[in-house]
Image 1 (tube, rainbow over the protein chains, first blue to last red):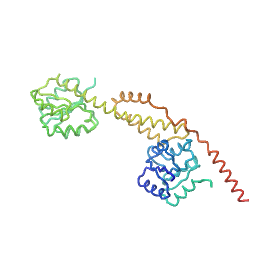
Image 2: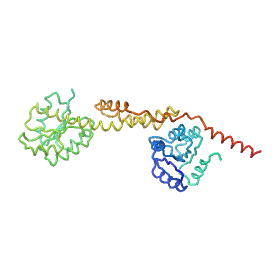
Image 3: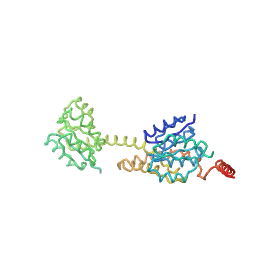
Image 4: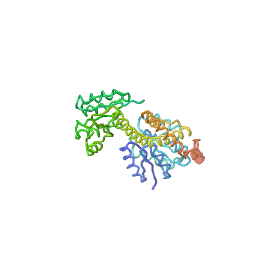
Length: 126
Length: 236
């Protein structure tokens, strides 16, 4: 079973996303913010995909994505960014900075759209 | 010389005035505030004025003194104040003295008392108070400083890899502010713990594993070219 690291500070959204992703037959590991997610990645546990929020305490999604993209170990892990309406400025910056292996999904998340985003990342150039 | 700011909690006016006059006659004491009830004292201990010592009269009764000291130790100024129980006479038995100590008092002053006795017991009690304050600050800073070091490493790492950190820098500022907000007395403890933590801090392990983002990888670039060729040949 493929493994997903789900990064979301809001517990309700995190639970909903977890259920959705588990429905796609992924094994989900939860992290409450970017810093915990980063520590989880650095601990050596491997993941096939990261689904992350943008605005979070301690470390935001942009910083997490940046750290992943400049690190040989996590460089090619696909990332789906789920974000609210207010995060659009940050989203456009991320889209410019890290187009590779990255998809965006607006909140509230639609199950089919999330599935499509994840599927497209499994083979982004097919 | 640091002066002791004191609260006197006594429901007998003549008695509390006597203590205030004695305290005011020696240079060791600064502001001395008179209060007649524990409730007034609790209010005073929640204000921003530092209180070094609280004199609690035996006249309030043991059923009042014990909960008062417990509650007072939960207030901002009362948590590190020294509590001195003012007892009826030096002929009080050991059991009474033990009870007073169990009630949370740091020292005992027996009526009638001399100026020298007052100063001596205040010195001793505030010394106990200082040790209590120091051990609490030491514990708090020992937890806080390693967090600051870790956050500092993280911010440095993000910056050195080409991104201006926002949230991480904000978190670092908040952590540093917590040190800044501590009382001036904590600075010596801070320097001791900080120097020790810096000396023993490991070299950040992530530096060697990172690279600057240089666009798409060669593998992806090759696949993009292949896809483009497929698309082009499809159109033809």
